[in-house]
Image (cartoon, one colour):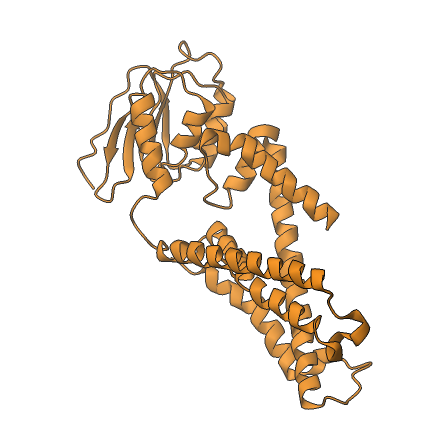
Length: 314
């Protein structure tokens, strides 16, 4: 638990310093490695991907085995309360095999086209776990208050009842918040409308950078021409929210190699105009080639006077 606490606090600190201050968000699984990549480079991304694989692999196998044995043990105990289960191999029961198989196979459903992404599923699953907290807190309060369950000498004292009552109240409040947030997340699955963060990003870029924006019929930014104002980390974080953008003109901007990392997630991008070599000496050809590997379908050019493409066609 101490190790998990340190890891969680480290991620929260990194997010607070890198994302929150600049108005950024985590929308996809690739955003998490990107977050470390902006600080540690390519090595940070690879380490995080390795950590994701280890976490998913160990959690999946551990849950399948553990839940299967737990279900099998409970079923045998309910049917035969007085039977001794010492030395019982629960893996040979049909219930164990059914539960373990379901835990291993059911996640494949989320790989089907149109299903929610990794981040959305993680948020929903964690929220559902919070919803169960009142049941756990209430059950523990009842068990620890009954002498037949815990023993007369270990029953709760008055101040322990107060503490458990406060914890149950917090659990109920947290569960209500989890229910509302889960409903909002699920209701937005498959929606073609831009999120609140994307709308705010478009307004910020238009106001602070005099960006010329072209929108599609759903309200997503299709094309953006950035003015000559200096680009800050906050502006780049806002720019990353425009996930459906197809044309981006940064010819009059002052950017460096590190700033190009903010553009790696633009999978819909088809044309990208970067400052010319004379305008941006800090932008190396190696960084541009590396960006091209992330955006194989995008035509990248360097020009201080680009031509805006025809966006009248859908």
